Length: 298
Image 1 (cartoon, rainbow, N blue to C red):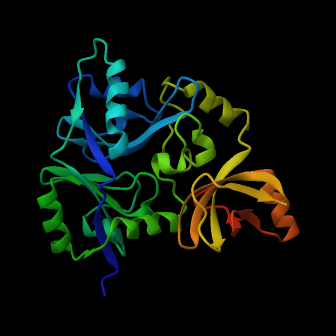
Image 2 (tube, helix red, strand yellow):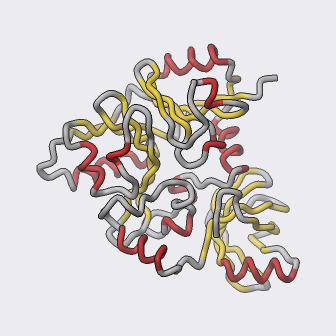
Image 3 (cartoon, one colour):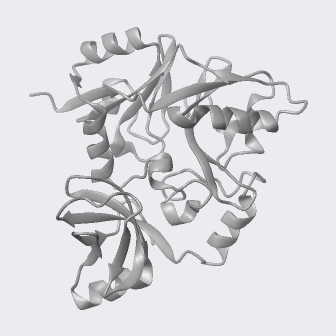
């Protein structure tokens, strides 16, 4: 049986940012360095409110002379609307890229199959699109943004077995990586509470962008008191938003889950107390055993 899998990701869709000012336009808006995006390098980034709260996340990838944003399909129009608000006199053209689809390839030597190093963000052109190692974590595998017919042939030629988006979601949760607005409530979530620094979504040397002040202050003043953590679930998986408690007191809030794996935003103090007591947290009818993701450094 194949140890490598692929699936289309219909919950994702692309926006195209073209024109000579494409990189500098994005640079002043998003949390990562858009000037480093080219045919061999992709980046993950967020678009924030002026108060530093989460609005959108996306991958920035280059196809020819255009930067494409691999974003949440259901919220693409909102992202496009917000970007257009800042266009002003910038020499950029913004619009949907409906001829391209997003897919994921993961499993044994996935990056090697595409001739890519297993390094986050490593990218290369393929046909009318691009393939790139997930900039958040190499263990997530390779993402592709390309015409649908090209992706199907590529998967078959390289020996990736067909899978479903739900299979990829389980893979993501096994690595405790958040997924856009499913795990980061819009206009509420803070990047550093949700692993964006360790997962390569913030560049603290790039200069100003919308929401930078709060993000930088949280880092340099050590103000992060909650963190997104992996949880092993005993019982029915709690719905996103379910309150998490310890000894009857608020300890956090559940995020996405599948089977026995889930994510929860938890107060570090509560996690420490539960660990010292050898106890578990409670969310609805489930008991949760939290643990720090392997990629985290808190």
